Image 1 (cartoon, rainbow, N blue to C red):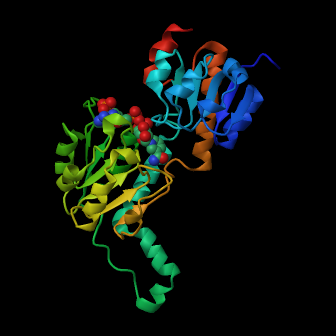
Image 2: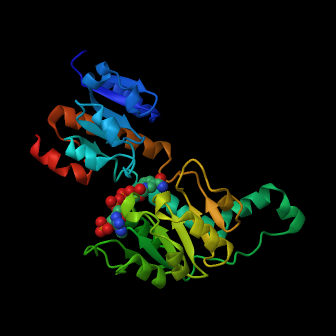
Length: 323
Ligand code: NDP
């Protein structure tokens, strides 16, 4: 009592994060990560943040004794990790523990998209099987496809391993060619889109990938093309996608992520050739609990021995020099 570091919980967090932070630290909750909510007393006491929300530079600046931001999720684009590093604040994320779940969901979304399984189920539930006969034969199939993976990182490789079992051809693009895989490497996203008919987006969000999948990439994918986005909504130009789906530039899309969640562009919800999920790729109790544990283990590792389990690359120097 009194000696544990004080951890701030801004906004909503997974219940296991809240329970463990309350049990292992002194916890303070506030409505949102807004610098205007930081009283002088909080500014003095807060040494860590546990959150899954946006943490900007102004909020970091409002907490002079902040040492660590433990983010819930592998994609930490909501956190200004560069500013944090310049202020000597470590940022951690939750890699690996969600890769298999996200890869499973990606395969499900891909098959839903090409084989129209959600629409077939809606057809059954509406009683149309009995009244109208079998659901239509799907114009699309996974058979014979060439899948291009945009981002062959932890999750991208888990997706590729699964796809090997489907007998499809696999290529990828990332900024650097990997020496530990035998899949064909495409030098650019354009090159990848030209050489595949099924594009899976699993790169991080942020400025470097902002609207990387635009009208030109979609047209390179072609009229048999299928786009699956499980990375970040910001990576796909949504207006260009809606146009491409409407006029047959590509055949279909499966989306788990959107630019302005939880809002979904109304035009997309009106199209039949798109399968939509509400950002559920990692959303099982099993995997979210593992993410919650890793978040709190990062806080514990930092405050026990200056060793967080999974610091983000921007924090690398802080962690190796500060123990
Ligand atoms: P990794 O960091 O392991 O992999 C990222 C991959 O993207 C690497 O292959 C990297 O290779 C490549 N990459 C990064 N930036 C670029 C760029 N500008 N251009 C081309 N390639 C790039 O991350 P994970 O696989 O663990 O996670 C990937 C992302 O998936 C997360 O950042 C998150 O946004 C998203 N995600 C979405 C989820 C959901 O619920 N829908 C759940 C979990 C994650 P290189 O550096 O060589 O370019």
